[in-house]
Image (cartoon, rainbow, N blue to C red; front, side, top):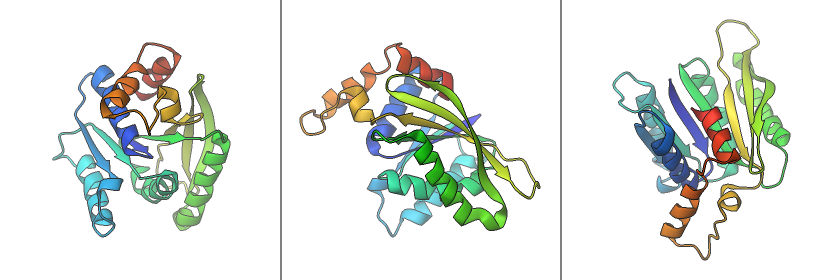
Length: 202
């Protein structure tokens, strides 16, 4: 099944590309980095990208999308989740907790979805723990339709306990692009973090 990963920034997109290139059986990956799109072009570009990805004419099976920061990630994901809820696509949210709790992030998304989609009856349901390691926690989140009209597929949250840069040991001020790329690749070392990602994303 196709997969969409919603993330905070461009570095997340680069890391996901490394992960899927290494482990996915047939990685045909497309991406959209919101920070590289002008505000005027954004709504058009964003909807076209997702529509194209879900369409039968598309050759990609993976889409990784960065939202240019956590506030935009929360807002953007809460907006599109209604349209994606009934589509045959696996949905993932890759987020930095920045030392907060994953329950706080879920509660924020739950409230945003409630406010935006209550007229449609869409709501965030239960969460189930999928796994954890030193760097990350993973949760499965259900989506429910209070009107019971159609099936809803949930989504998975992959949450860095701090952030990707801390997990990889990246110094954003000192490390150049090549060093950052090497450090991102070194996370895929067969350890507990690597295993959690493979178990959850593949």
